[in-house]
View (cartoon, rainbow, N blue to C red):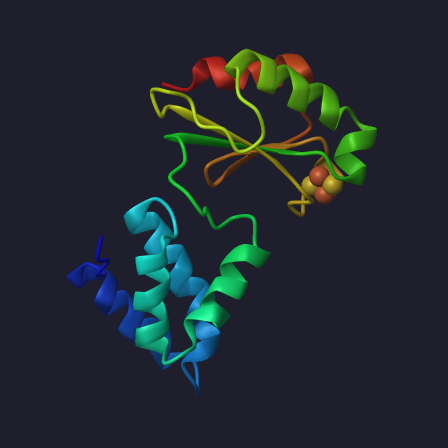
Length: 157
Ligand code: FES
């Protein structure tokens, strides 16, 4: 299905592009905007961004596949990312990941049937000093225990 940015987002893109001497470095903020609008980064989204930024579609794809925060398929309303990289792992990251996985009944990359939840095991999200952590969409929850992580899941509507 064709993807077009909303009028509002096109205005934001104009402002973003003013910050750069050339268009291509704006690929990250445009991908963020697109994901906010579309929920995930489809092939059509990448085509549209490549066209706006006069880039090769393969180069946009390279950015999308490199960064875990860009979703390559539709995710749940609450996308749960659990870090199991070194600092989080040493402080119980896998215990948290496994309890979240069991509670949701999802494997890595899975989406619940009602599309409320999706789960992803991720590499370092830059909160090592307050490990272990999870993210729910854009919100970080840090210094967690297994119990606190499960309470967070319970609090999501
Ligand atoms: S290792 Fe988990 S946030 Fe850095």
